[in-house]
Length: 66
Image 1 (cartoon, rainbow, N blue to C red):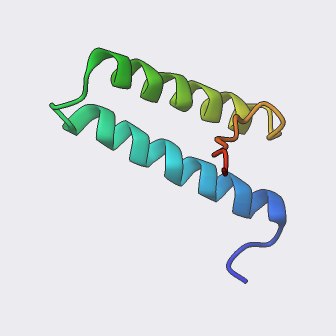
Image 2 (image 1 turned 90 degrees about the horizontal axis):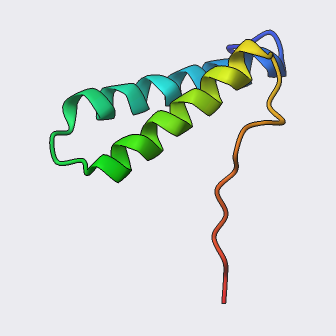
């Protein structure tokens, strides 16, 4: 493995997602204000999760299956 612990792997994944969201927010000029706000909220949740060294506050998107 590339990581010493599950915590390191989760932190890496969260940092990567936060970075990708920040790039999209900065570079995608077609985003609507609602989409920008949603991305900012996701970034805030990820940042809080990383700082707290926990993942219980991380929102998980779900999809309903018919």
